[in-house]
Image (cartoon, rainbow, N blue to C red; front, side, top):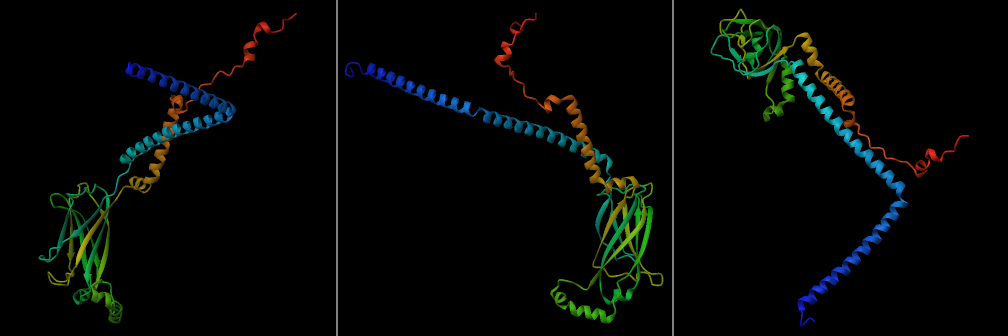
Length: 307
């Protein structure tokens, strides 16, 4: 047969193998399905419990996602409201470059590159000046530092001055301190200098916005023009504006207000969602018909007849 009809023999062989394989697969799947059904029937209660727990966990995850979404929306609403409620005080730090070619060295701080000081705002100016402990500065004594607010046309809006001098150290104390600090002094880690910190309060902006600040070093009245000016290593200015009373309270409690607005927004969103979209937030599984054969058999026809 193979010699006379090789293709027919091949087709019949393939058909036989496919038939045997199909019968083997059917018997295997049948035995396996019967074993699985028997095992499921034996552990039916456990499977119901596992399915219930899984469904509960799935609902918990779903509700958690919904609540997280509402919380993110509440935080966004709180952030948007805080932008309108909170006003940040002006904080500025600039280096001062005094012009020593004048009899009264002057340094200007333009306000073009930073927010303009709002009108009627109290401002505190802090000047940091690093002076060498030279014999000239020690013998100089007192000198005066003045801060002025200038408008765009150069007129003075507010002015305030503050006296200052190097901290006094007697000769024995200075020699003793130099002996203790001789190693870092020689190594160059520290220098013989003092940093003066001048706080000038009571400055208030007028109706015209401030466009420039002028810092001036003034001499004492008994000295000749150009005399009594201290030697400086460097100087800087820190400017802080004081907000009005209500704005200052909001700025001081901004984190607490942000949290409370977010909580109130979250509770309002949750209340609206529960009232209007309760099936979406709290889905319920459909109840199955648990009627028993006894319930079907208990029909009015089977009830005993009244006499």
